[in-house]
Length: 442
Ligand SMILES: Cc1cc2nc3c(=O)[nH]c(=O)nc-3n(C[C@H](O)[C@H](O)[C@H](O)COP(=O)(O)OP(=O)(O)OC[C@H]3O[C@@H](n4cnc5c(N)ncnc54)[C@H](O)[C@@H]3O)c2cc1C
Image 1 (cartoon, rainbow, N blue to C red):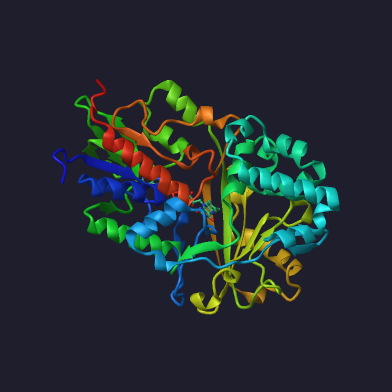
Image 2 (tube, rainbow, N blue to C red):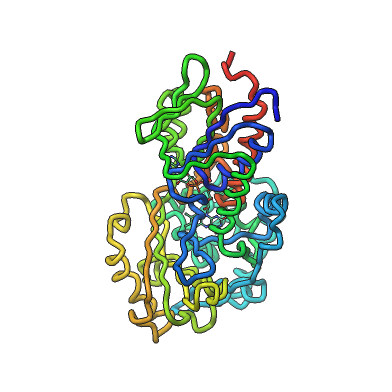
């Protein structure tokens, strides 16, 4: 127990909020997590049918073997034996067919890269990016410009541009910092990991562990504003009209929500938050009676020119056994989209009408009778868009208001967003909160 036990509020029970709570509670402070949803896990949360043993994530999720912050936390919690790393097959599209693309021999055999020189350039660029740590030099360029220069137009157009369009859409794909691509290639592994029972099982167990350590997690509790009082404490107002005071507050939401929640932030910090760009996502989960991919493929990289009305197709049960889901086969179909995209407004049924007929391009036997149930998840904040020199535009974790801290996906750059970096930034924020001594800012 510390001499100075602080009352701390964390807004959001995602991976960042829960990781920060863990360290702050261990340091002896009284931590409350205020969470709008009915369960922990945030963007990585999941759901379960009554006959499923495991949950599925609302948005497809897996870990990489390089996710050291996340795997380190799990080890600390004593649950490493619950992490599994299968090796599912990812495929790339070329002229109407999909080809495995998850090993060097598979990449060399992929016809989309053309002949000798392209393959050599693709390989050399890949090796260079794996070896270099100089992302600060890379961030001066866009991925589009850098890759065209070093890998060549043909390699970029067939390999990387479809992925960039899939992630960032027509408006942003050619404006993203090359450091983003560097970070992505640096940490990718072909083995992909999950937690026994699904990401929701991890979130539930972590939440229970936090409660055991004295953290007060309050679900269905939506925060509306945060203001600093004259005595230096922070007043947190809830949507139900009540207000509570804390010594320190950590917000783990999007930059846009942070700006709305804390309107007293100085203009330059607020302006910085509002300048940050991001993509939303609309993802349909479908349970079907039979496997979709005849070859057992997990992850389909679909370029726009292939003519599907979505760019992500993932057969989750080619990563994890259908037995975990009562024999159901699980697909994810979706897209990263700007938030004014019509898909955000379409009903689940309208999206199903649009998406499902295209599954017969993957398996000609597929028909609507295979479908047991669909669910659609939508989020306005799914993927930050780091423009060149983004390192200069990252909002600081300790805001100009003493006692108020902010940790989001937009601040983990040069790394790409993910639960691993949510754990990292949550714990980094906790460390900074622990050393903040003088909360009057004097
Ligand atoms: C389509 C998609 C695919 C992804 N794939 C992967 C993957 O394969 N692997 C991986 O590791 N990561 C993946 N991610 C990223 C990962 O989900 C995020 O990086 C991580 O979950 C972010 O955690 P967080 O705690 O920062 O934020 P969040 O998870 O967003 O947590 C914020 C929490 O705040 C709550 N909240 C919001 N408003 C309020 C309010 N007013 N008051 C109180 N609470 C509020 C929310 O309900 C939420 O629980 C993916 C994300 C998406 C969208």
